[in-house]
Length: 101
Image (cartoon, one colour):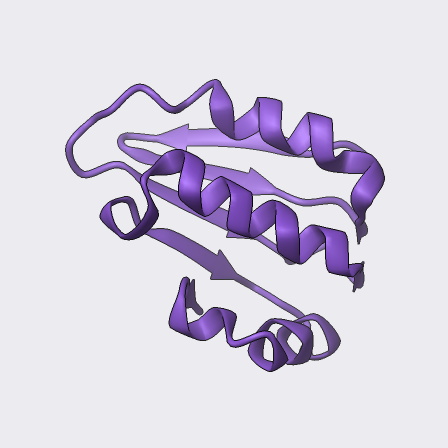
């Protein structure tokens, strides 16, 4: 299953598939890169609602995205993570770099 993107005003929502893994790195990068033009108030939302598995490469992809979109200046919200995925994100201290909702 592929990623989907929805834009609502300044919010860019990327909905991830069931497995967020290394093989998606090009698709994931191309997805957020198409929205990199600077705009005040822009926010990225990464929706994990369908994601039941992620590997360590997925953590790296999120870190690369964070730097590409502006680091601390552009908020990235990680939302709807299932307990197993949330546990991985928290173990990697992503709640300190991203807004984990």
